[in-house]
Image 1 (cartoon, one colour):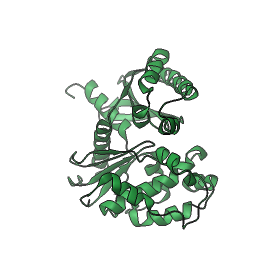
Image 2: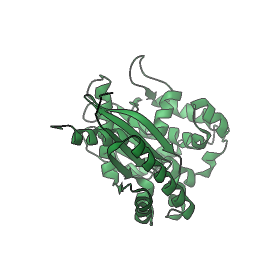
Image 3: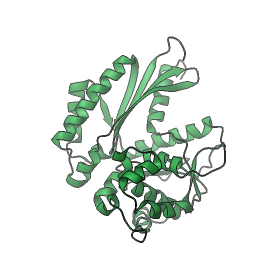
Image 4: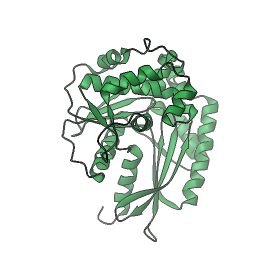
Length: 308
């Protein structure tokens, strides 16, 4: 850690949780020193009823009051907080963010699906470079699977799409996914649904993926070469879904080292990522373990660094 260098922070208010990362600004960029996750599923109410309920508002405000204390404790000099799919879709989203600011002093910016995708692009390409991997081809597919939406784009920034196929959203549409299912019932229905949203697609030679559940899948379903970035073999995903389906949530959680509160999101995540791979003809999805918070930190670091 560089003496006297500042600390910065990024906050992401997603559909399934709110996450904070505090980082120290050093000569090689931001180095995370503290992380916190508040498991508030805003998407469950928004995708069912179109708004955030009073209890969820109270929990979110309470979480931000605590996050404000964390920022002060770590002497954070600059931060950026963003909100994505759930608050974009909520009829009272702006009202909720105003309440968050009034009680915590933290301003949260509501970003579009396009900006969310661009932040994802910067994070994934930056992570690949830091790992010493070759620069991805321009037509490499990038995917960000969140609780409310699925962002897709190419590595050159083209073909941006933000689709309503996040894990929390799909749980509401397909409640059977929350219960033990037979392998026969775990079908390829999501391939057809995703295809209907996408229309004709051009094949991709490779894909890079991000999102909390994608990261968990890469740890629980390891692929790729030794010493390289974690990756997922698309051909292994549907068999994995058929194996996961009959299991109770507690067993799913244990299998992937997940908190029980996230176990119900795993099956839809596997099915969605499999559908993406199948439609684009991708065999492997590299998972660098980076997300939009990393891109926010990198931007803040550049703003604070002379000549950045």
